[in-house]
Amino acid sequence: MELGKKIRVMVVDDSALARNLIIQGLSAHPRMEVVGYAINTLDAKQKIPRLKPDVVTMDVEMPGQSGIDFLKEYLPTNPVPVILVSSLNLKVFDALNAGAVDFVRKPDVQDSKEVFITNLTQKVLVASMAKVRSAPMRSPSVAVSTPSLGGGPALDRVVVGLGASTGGTEATLEVMRRLPEDIPPMVIVQHMPKGFTQMYADRLNRICKMEVREARNGDELRRGLALVAPADLQCRVVRIGEKYTVSCTAGEKVSGHRPSVDALFQSMAEAVRCKMVGIIMTGMGQDGAAGLLAMRQKGAYTIGQDKESSVVYGMPMVAYDIGAVCVQASCENVATVLLRHLKTLH
Image 1 (spheres, rainbow, N blue to C red):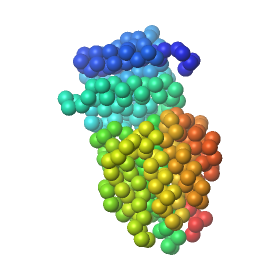
Image 2 (cartoon, rainbow, N blue to C red):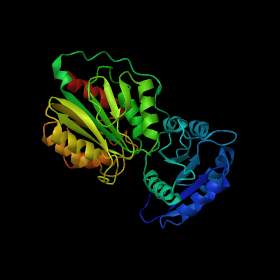
Image 3 (cartoon, rainbow, N blue to C red):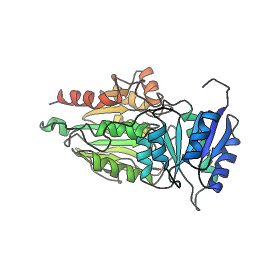
Image 4 (cartoon, rainbow, N blue to C red):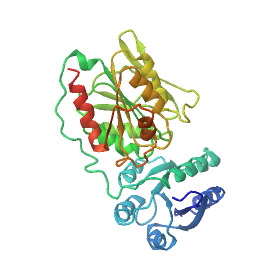
């Protein structure tokens, strides 16, 4: 997008109440212009070519064709950044797999409309700079056949941290489904609204070979277990004697986020006395870059997702530019690079 040019937004929602809230909220932003709306996907198909929006906000559940089916059908030939506006619903992950850039939780009675609009506005700004995937990730619901790592005590003394933001739900899945069931302990920070991290962890657990679950305060790290940081809590690695656990607590935002990739990576740099790996994936901003650098300075092996495969090459770019990244890899090759490194530790 050209600097100074307004972002043209189109709103797709069958609810007049939701449409009006979104239109009024986004129109108040000086960098945005709502160029029109559609009441369903059929209406959207007719209007998008004429209105030429830079970003589309779309409800997931609508009468007739769903937002997910629309994305699968429309995006391969008409790549436009789409932000989902969804209730607390598992289908949001299917829509992300179909090519949507990101999602915002639709407010219910208790939720602040101002917070919703602030979050949506931020995501529209990011989406206007995002690279749209024109096809879904391959075999998203199937783990890739990967031989066991095996190995003795060496791999029992490795901790892996992974951080991601915009585009990261599917990018992280693409990495995780290529890893074996006896992977060293992993802690994952994915920027996500409250309520969705549990569903995301459950989804990874269904698809991937290792056990994946949402982290709980005091959980012990062990081989074959990946923990997803809970939304709205800071997640850090803590050393207790020879063991490592996670601390999941309320606290200030770090690098603008809670959970923060920087908070996780900094805690690993400070607490982990064994071998460690840091992985930074697609996302806007710089959360995780400073923490990854601290990890590398303590001897960690660090991997950054490359520009070509990132939906938003922000976090991994900043990390690479400050010297925090040992090696860059495409989304599909991050797992291979990680496994290759782990095999050198036997």
